[in-house]
Length: 64
Figure: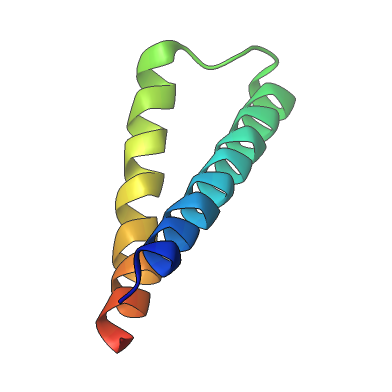
């Protein structure tokens, strides 16, 4: 697999992770009326990162 394709997958994954994280913060503020604390954000971002790796990145990398 080319380096360009790997970097493109990494870049798209970072954009998707940032968008999902921003959506979580927005939904949290809407339902609870305050920003989530840093520990909650770290835990949610790690969960999002692991899920995106197993369901998005790993299948794409294993196809080629």
